[in-house]
Image 1: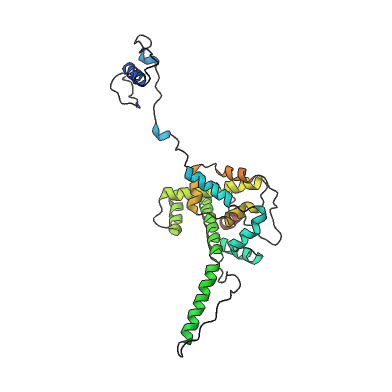
Image 2: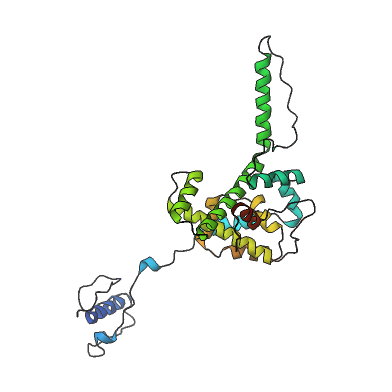
Length: 288
C-alpha cells in the first residue's frame, strides 16, 4: 500500500530522501561557514527516517501580556487587611445592615428599600402658584436619583457577585445532568440573546476559576475574606472568563501573591458571603 502523505512544513514535491537533501541545502545556504557535505543517499533509506509532523492547531497560544497585566491588577486591587473596612465603605457595604441587605439580594430576595439613610438634599426653590406640586415631585425624583447615585458602587458590587452565583449555578446544572443546550438557553435568557455558546461556556469556566480561587484562599487561611474578595474587588463575568481562558490554573497566582493568612470563617456581627452555601441554598446541590 502507498505510504500516507505527510504534511510538510516546507512545500516540496518528491520522496523523503529528496526532501531531506532539499532541507540540507536550505540550511547550508544560510550557514555557509559550516561547510557540511550533503548526505549520501546510501547513508540511510527512507524507511529508517521518521518525520515529526507539524500540527499548528496543537500549538499553545502565546501568553498575552495584556491579560497577565489585568490579572496582576486584579490581585493588586484586593484590599490589604488594614484597609478592609475602608474598602467596605467604598463599596457601600460597610455596616451589618448593609451586609444583610446585600445578602438578601444575592440570595434572590427583593427589597424595596436598600439605600443608605437619607442624604441631605437642598430644599426646593420657591415656585410660582400652581406649580408647587410639580416642583415637589421633581425634587422628590431628584432626591431619589441622588440616593441611587450614592449607592452605585453597592449595586455594581452586588450585581457582579450575583452573576458569579448565577454562573456557578449553571455549572451545577450541567454537572447534575442538564444538557448544554438547555443550560445555554437558560443563561442566554438572562444574559442577552446574542451570546454565543462558546461565550457562555467561557463564563461558566470563569465561575469554576473563581470557586477554585476561593477554595485555595480558604486553604491558605483567608477565612470569610476568601468570598468577600469577589464582592469588594468585583469583576465582570467577561473579565473572570478571560482569567480562566488565559490559564485555568492562574487562580494559583492570586493565592501565591496574597500568601497565607489567619482570618476566621466568621466575623462577629457579620454574615459571610459563602459562595458554596449560597449556591447550595439555591440549587440543593453541594459544590465540590
